[in-house]
Amino acid sequence: MPTPPPEDVPWGHQSRHYASLETGRADVRNDGLGDIERRWGHLVRAAMPKAREEVEQAFRQWNGIVRDQLRNEMGLRLSVGGEAQSVPVRICDGLPRPLAAALQEFPDWEWLMLHRPDVEATVRGAQLLAHHYDEARLTIGDAASMAPESSLIEVASSAKQLLERFDKLNAIKRIVDCQEDVLGGYHFRIPEVRLYWVPISIVSRLLGIPVDALTLVVLAHELAHAYSHLGRDIDGEAWNTNTFANADMAIVEGIAQFYAQVICESLNMRFPAARHAFEILLAKQSGAYTAYRDWLDSTERSGEIMRVAMIECRSRNSTSTADFESMVDRHRQQVKGRPGRARSGVAATSFDSSSGVQ
Ligand SMILES: [Zn+2]
Image (cartoon, rainbow, N blue to C red; front, side):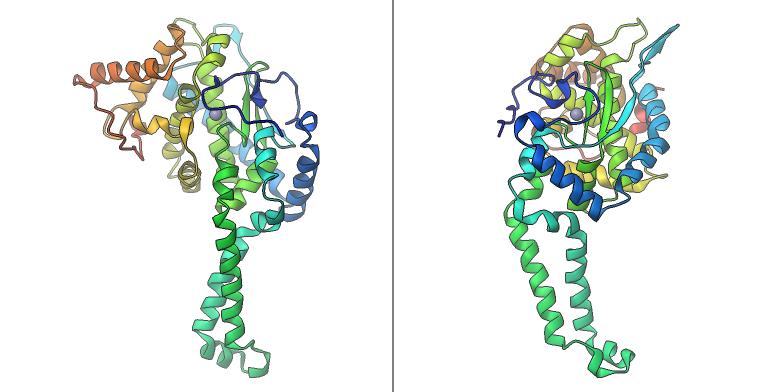
């Protein structure tokens, strides 16, 4: 089994699955993980026969809207004058390597992972029936057809024990928090965005969130990578590809997470499930995926501060998180006209998307 790259490996290091130039699918066949990839492909198709279609529909529905929002919030364009940089989105089969490796650790729990919401509902449903046992029996009108109250309590207890055993393995955290994008990928050397419909389906079941909402979160995150890399500023400049690839994980993932959150919040009236999905996913993430919450808080003009810090980071070819954080601090002072905030570790949970660049 390959060792996952440590967090201090640069974002676009060649060991990352999205640094590959291979086209078309998440390829784990050369890592001895092909069996698990095929197995999960079959399992997800059987448990969630419409999942791929749901991912495709969500992509079609939100692709243009997400791109418009990114252009507005970042102040960057993929096309300048007659020159256009295309970044297509592909819906792909397969499992990225880090996720395949994580799934391989829990071979006895595949069925529960794909049906966790049903097992949770069983606990609640059996408890509800036991609580209203006499009323239910009267309503049915035939006492013989009603299971004994003790059996309902046993069903609830068994389902609850299963969930508790599963949760003790910390499997959800291990699978969701791979420290590398595994639900989608921005393959920056091609360039193209890939949405991995099997991982999106698995994680939607693990976290109890809708497939279309999680698809929007992943689409916004991956397109934010693409726009932050290739989007042209008013001087026509983009992020040098080698510098982008050598940047610390926290910078590149922090920018993508920030803008994915801004987009989910701005679409909250139209699609509240997306913001909910972002928050549920974020609660299971750590490291480079959550560090950005310490950079800014909801009372500040966070969109403007982040945008100018990102432009400066690109133009100065900075790759270190410490440098980027000092840029954020300096721009905060300029925007707000007040000293930089001490890093208290208090995480912001919300950003004011209305403060973004108009
Ligand atoms: Zn990412």
